[in-house]
Amino acid sequence: MKGITKRFPGVLANDRIDLEIQPGKVHALLGENGAGKTTLMNILSGRYRPDDGEILVDHQRVRFHSPKDALQVGIGMVHQHFMLIPNQTVAENITLGMESPRFILRREKIEQDVERLSKAHGLSIDPRAYIYDLSLGQQQRVEILKLLYRNVEVLILDEPTAVLTPSEIEELSKTLKDLARSGKTILFITHKLEEVMEIADEITILRKGRVIAQTKTEEVESRRELARLMVGREVVLRVEKEPVIPGTTVLELRDCSGYGDRGHQAFQHITFAVRRGEILSIVGVAGNGQTELVEAIMGLRPLSSGQIILFGKPLQESTSLNMGEVGYIPEDRLGMGSIPSLTLVDNLILTSYPSFHRRGVFQREAAARKTEALLSRFHVVAPGIHATARQLSGGNLQKLILARELSKNPRLLIAEQPTHGLDIGATEEVWLELLKQRETAGILLVSGDLREVLSLSDRVGVIFRGRLMDILSVEDEDWISDIGPMMAGVKQERTR
Image 1: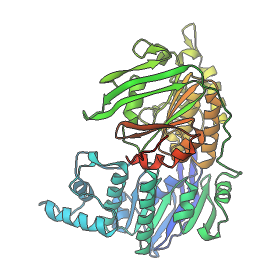
Image 2 (image 1 turned 180 degrees about the vertical axis):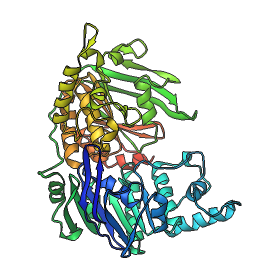
Image 3 (image 1 turned 90 degrees about the horizontal axis):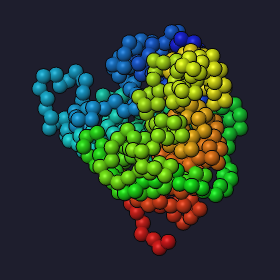
Image 4 (image 1 turned 90 degrees about the vertical axis):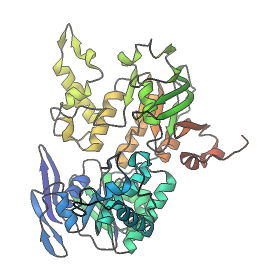
């Protein structure tokens, strides 16, 4: 890629970027939120067109008008949010959109081909399985197999480990290394520096749309050096937790069960309590019932049995959800956490609209001042307060939602994957904000990031297939090593 430039309204996403990648290498792309990483990879995979610059494949200039054009020259991308059709099988998803077979679908032959391909690359998967029955780790294998089935030589992966268990991350790392040894080129975007040091051969770091460093991994002294290059300052990603004596119970679940959208049992017999002054984390791989559980707590999904008590009252009788006493950071930042077509001002007051009304008149100037202050405090990179939410990068949109909910100073904060997609500097800032909030509120943290959970939590509940495997105290170090296996459904029997 030579001199690649891409502009969006009010934002210069890529500024004359040069990037050269070699066959048989694993190349990591690092940078802060809004640095232009995903935009650059969307250009390389044919999803966006550059405003300036050129792409050369095997020294030949190419022009991509769509991802199909990129696939034809051997470049494909696995996006952060998988693009699979749930009610189709693995084999059907892998062959969907291909020109052959065109009229007659020889299902058995395709399933045999997919099975051979999956075994050859250590991506074992049943080609007859339906996508909705697969874990997110298995769905990611399907996405990779889609590209390998099309003989792709350059595989781009955007945040590939964000939804995986520790054991699945190990398996993916081995797969990527094996693919590179077979001659494939791997390009991956990540914020997890330990993975970069473990997997990558080469590293390119972007900041504010420009390349600021390109290096071989073996020449990097430490993860701390990478973090400093990414964000321009020293980042430790370690927080000191002040001891807080838990106070009154702000949320209690009593033997709660509920169903998912497809009528399946999403969670069952869940019992726990969250007290003011503590962070209780629910940790598990995405898709194990935690999303439906949070929706039930927020009154968005009915229980099939059990009871939810909010600030001492049954959820049905409580007015706290409407009074701003509960902060909610949803996992789905686009569909649930924001309205993409509204301005940043409107998005920031969505859950505190009444506080900007005086005698029936909306105080727009006050809302604008509040927005300016929050964007500055939470370092949200945006073209301006009147930009729309859809103009923000994923990480900056996440920071916008965090700013809105934390600024309400709620008595109970429910945070689903609060640092998902955030760079290491922003993650550190969010951790500090959550610990500050813990002094006056109870926090229910739902995350798949073990490092985050162990850094912030006072207690940890592990969820697998809708059941709480156990609730552990982080002070009990003998049990910490069991959390990873429990996320995969394996519980060691021990004497406490």
